Each structure stands twice: as structure tokens, then as C-alpha cells.
Image (cartoon, rainbow, N blue to C red; front, side, top):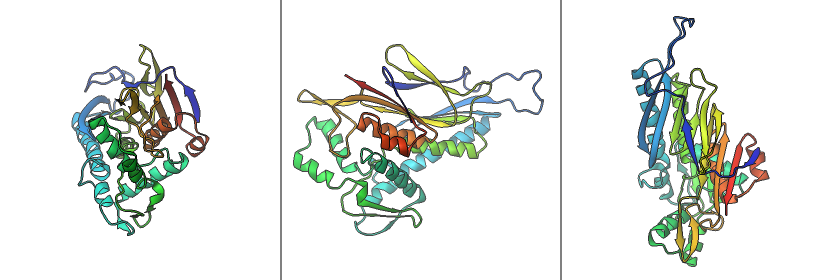
Length: 327
């Protein structure tokens, strides 16, 4: 894995090929008459608590609109599976069931859990979707501006750890070792959903597409007359590094902007599952990988680890990681 240190990594800004919504490249006089002329279309919705944006190239607007709608539907479906904000989501209904028993899960939830377990193992627990009991405490802390009591934090930590959940991907079943566990897919869910939405578009003969789900990007084939989609990494100092990308995912995680201060100490919204505490160091991480869900999960894991990781590099050798630690 290539590890590069950027002078700053604050946000991702997508620089699309110059074309207005619905406008596209002009046909060359020498182009075959039966070759379709593709135009650029862009659509947006609010999904998973973020702005979801789809850009795709198609010959006809009605086809583009239909395909984008089906991709948005896939994101909405996965939110119904993974959300820890919706008490009626599949994930929330699962954790409400008795521990020690096998419970049926959908193929989508089993797949998300299985992928999450891979990153949990490779990160030595720095990434953990069972962090729900702890993240719930820190959401309350963000409102009250009071740290959770040590006894409360210890109790929450006792219900965190992917070693406490068994996943049978073949039988589509899961079993928890203890009651009161809670799943939080915030570190992987958007990348996972963006990836699936792009797969929907590709299956509908729309391979030239990009899905942007709150900054988590799933990037398809290159737009017409270009080598790829140009993504700018904003340094926050009027500079940006442009990267031309195709068929990959890009994700950014960090705490440069989202944090709280309690008794003069700065705590990140990113929580270390191993300690139960919000990070106190400032960091920003951008990851590029051929799998958008990997980019999202690794950005979360590296934000907690704070530096390079041989174990993660061995497990995900194709990922390119950019880390900036702020003073």
C-alpha cells in the first residue's frame, strides 16, 4: 500500500468534466452514425443523513432518470438495513433480539457484517461496527457536554467487540454473545451503499457514472473524451492535488471540524472502540481503493490508528492512504 503524507487533507471536492446538467460532448463529424451521443445528467436526494448525488452519462434523459432512481432506491434500501438511527431498521431489530440464539439476517446485513469483520481483524479492533453502545454515549455527550461516567463507559465497553458476534454467511444468520449490543455502521455504511448503487447503474448499462454519498465516492468508467473523473483533495490552503480516477472508491475521514471541547480538552466525534474515548489528536485520512466500502472502512480505521499499519497494508494491499496529522 502506498502511504503518502499530505500537508493537509480537509475535504474532497469533485471536479467534473465541464458540462452542464443534460449537456454532453458534441459528436465528431467522423464519428460513426450509429454510435450514441452521451450526455451528462445529475440527480440528488437526501439519503443516509447526507446529500446523495449521482452523475451519469446516457443517451436519453428518461433513461438516465430511471436508472438514477433505481440507484437511489438501493441506497434507501440499505439505509433500512443498516441504520442505527431508525429503530425499525433490520440492524436495530436484530440487536433487540435475545442473545445466545441464532437469528436470521438478510444477505445484505450478513455481507456488511462479514466485510466489517475483515477490517476489524486487520485493524486489531480499531474499526468495529459493534461500537454502537459507545457511540450512543458520545452522542449524548455531544449534547450535554459532559463526559460519560467511568462506570457507564466500562459497562458500554463490555458490550463492544466483533468477537461477541458470530456470523454465518452461508446460512444467513447471526448470534450475539451478550444482550444489549448495538450495531453502528457509520464507518462503512456510506461507502458500502455508494458501491452498491454504482453496481446497480453498471447492471443497467450505465457504467459511466459516479455516486457521491456525503463525500464517499463510488467511481465508474471515465466520462466521454476524458481519462477519468478528476477528484481534488482540498488542502484548506488554496491548494489541491488533482487525481484522475476510474473504477474505484474514495473516502475521507477525520476530526478537523467535528469535535467538542469539555473542560478545555478537545474530543473528536471519532471514537476509539478499544478505549471508548473520543480521539484527542487531530487527523484527516483519505483512502482510495478499487472497492468503495474498503476506502470508507479504512479511512475510519486509520483515523483511529493515526499512522501506517503493516497489518492493514497486508490485508488491503491495493489501498492508497493519505494521512495528515494536525498539531
